[in-house]
Structures are given as C-alpha cells and as structure tokens.
Image (cartoon, rainbow, N blue to C red; front, top):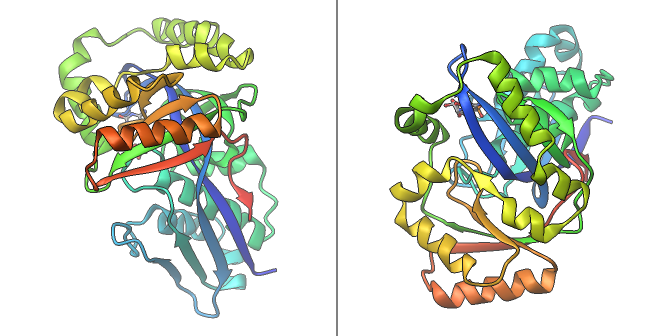
Length: 313
Ligand code: C5P
C-alpha cells in the first residue's frame, strides 16, 4: 500500500519543571506528558514525481520547507536515499484540528506521524526507539508524540519512561484564537528571570529528576487518583507566560472557580486546561467559563486522555 491515514494526538503537560541549562543551549527538564484525544489527521501518499509536498488548509500552517512535517519527510529522504528514489515523492496532507502555537505539540505530533507513516509506506520496519532517535533530531517533544500515553520525560524532553495509562480522565481546553506564545521566547525569558537558581551539577540534575519519578505526582498517576493529580499540576513556564498575558491569567482563574479537579497552562501556553472526572463535568465547566468570559475569540475543546500516540486512522 502506498498511502496511509494516521491519527496524531495532541499532548498536555501535567508537570513541567525547568532544572537548568544544557550545553546544547536547551534546558534540562522533568515533565509528565499526557496524550489527549484531540488530534490532527495526517494523510501520506507516494507521488510519481520526486518532490515532497505538504498541504494544509489552516491559514497559520506553512506549506513550505519550514513545516516540521516537511522536515520529517526530508529527514527520512536523507536517511534512506535509495528507498526514496525507489518509491518517489511524497504528498502529506495535514487535517488540522489541534490549535497552532498553543503548547499542545500540534506541529510535533504531525512530524511524528510523518515519520511513522513513511516507515510504513517504505516498509522499513524501524523499531520505536529507532523512530524516536530520528524524531529527537527534529524536536524535543517528537519522540514522545510517537509513543504517546502517560510518560515521564527528562533531558531535553526526549528521554522517556512510560507510566501507567490514565485514559479515564476528561478535560476541557481553552485558548484565545488570536493569541500565540513562542516557545523559544518563553524559555529565554525564564532563563533571564530564573537562571540564577538553575541546578549546575549533573548529580543534582539526576537527583531532582529522580525526586519527581519517586514523588507524589507519579504515585497519584499510579493510583489513577484524578483529584490528587489535579492538585499536583505544575508548570514553571506559567511564571513567565501568565504575567505577560493577563488574559491567560484571567482564563485560568475562571476555570479555577468551577470546581474542576485541577487547572493549568499546557507547555509554553497559551492553552489552559481543566481536569475533570467525566465528560459531563467537562461540558458543564466549559459552559460556566463561557458564560464568565464572553469574548468570541475564546475557543474550547472537550476531550479526554488517550493512552496512544500515533496510530492508523
Ligand atoms: O525542541 P523544540 O524545537 O520543540 O524546542 C523549541 C524551543 O523550546 C527551543 O528552540 C528552545 O528555545 C526551547 N526548549 C528548551 N529546552 C528544551 C526544549 C525546548 O530551551 N528542553
């Protein structure tokens, strides 16, 4: 078969702690990452020409070489030039449902789907670790997007330890359509404001990561204890994004007044999510916040946790 249709789920961060600088200019992180059912659909097919083409009808998604999905296809072409020559070009169609520049890994998950899809089309039989190695060359979140589920991520975010599935939890997400936050800006600002307290020694970094691994949040995940998880949500990037965007702070506050299990900004934002026990509670909370903030620029999504990463549609 020379075409595949794949589901590419978004992610949220249940926990994001910035530990320190890395020699490569990135940050050492400890994160708990969670796939959700809000997803893009990626169609990949071979072309009789020898080029890579990306189609997406979303106005904020580039269709040129700057698109991470294009970069993923190009990486596969560079890694396997003979197979590319045998199968010909590739057409990638992105059906965008995940909001863009939202802290939900939308671009990363599309790139992950392209790696998985090309592996299948070309019948390479790459293992998940091999695909994740390629993925880490494209972006820190992409190895996670391939595997999905509930995962503890360290290093740049590419060192992964799977945790028990949490797919019974629901959530409501909200984002101002016209508001985007640049991830490099968020990390750079964090470094300039909080860099003095960064951990410098490798052993200290390892100890901090181990503390999270054996700590109460991972225990709450093991117990599938939604209300504990809700209380332990944490994201260091809120310290720079919320003061810069009072709208996002107000949105977070509106969610906090609803009785959700917990509320937090995902990744570098500006999406805010509220954890809920049920779909009915998520819908009810969406209504409550919509009636508090009537701005038509505010979009909502009700979804649930997912235990899978990239999968065939
Ligand atoms: O790896 P990715 O391209 O997704 O990262 C986007 C940006 O986020 C990087 O350019 C960097 O500014 C920041 N980042 C970081 N440390 C990480 C991951 C991302 O500083 N571990």
